[in-house]
Image (tube, rainbow, N blue to C red; front, side, top):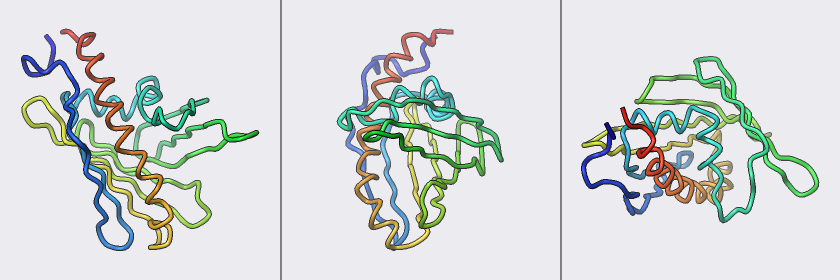
Length: 170
């Protein structure tokens, strides 16, 4: 059985919200048309994560994605960048299936950023909130542009889950 509500076979078309909370925190929130279980899987299974995380407008493809999703497990995501590569990596701090995911972002010389993602399901749809807590105001200011990528990525996630809904029959 498809876990979506009857008649909900399309992305939500809902605009994400981007909010600055204090000097160091940025929050992007969007409702995704799918149950929390599927949305959580899209954040924690590399084969799914690769399909939506990189905004299409960036024109990049992910070279590799390794995720060991457990407390103390690590991730590493690699992209081509000019004549070399660019890597994002860190450690999972908290993993609560279908509810909450916390990881560090350790690639910056300016300190560690902590990302907390919450998944709140309401009537078969999931409100995803991505909180990035930067080590300083300057780091948050500098990252404001990259956080602009998250709304597009979450739209891509919504589109992906529409496709997964048709293949997740039980």
